[in-house]
Length: 181
Image 1 (spheres, rainbow, N blue to C red):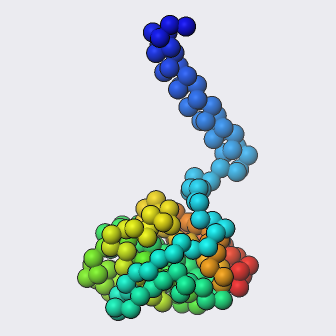
Image 2: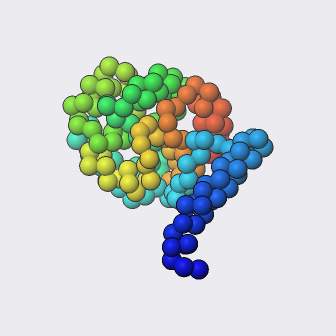
């Protein structure tokens, strides 16, 4: 084949690949196995990435602090994040039911984080500041809010992308807390 023909066929090949992917997604949707929030994560089933972050009170939060012998929910959030405002009442309800939640403020200023928590409630046992966003990269963060369930041995067992809902908290998180308790 000539180079010119290959260049003319390239868009057709790309369209065929996109069509096959779309067809596969439709098949998964009709079978009930498609999860639009199912974002792949390289840390699921692995130990929490090593990190050390300053907390809101001047102490330090490390990956070792998440190994508590019981499950912990880690929630990445930010004061500038509108979906984080939506999930705030759900996280407060989870705190009221005794769910240990650690917050990591992503690319946020400490004063803005304090203001956010003062206005929308503070569901966190501890809040760490990832102002440059480097720790979030190691976790594979796509955006905020994003939550991870860590078992008592420090293994990442679950990831949820987007604002936590009452339904997700009462079904998925509650079930995982029982499973890994």
